[in-house]
Image 1 (cartoon, rainbow, N blue to C red):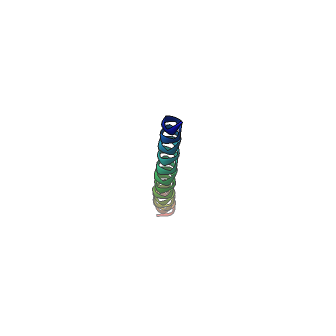
Image 2: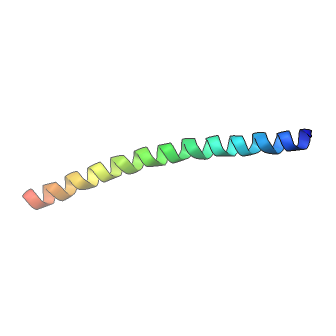
Image 3: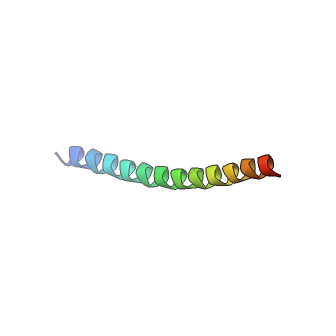
Length: 46
């Protein structure tokens, strides 16, 4: 029984870790997209 608990907590840890990492990646991706769109607008209008 303790073995199952260990694997469960490991899975939960991994999931929460990947969720946090995914959020961070998503935020940086949004930043990049915003910068890129600004650059594209800049290029088109100037």
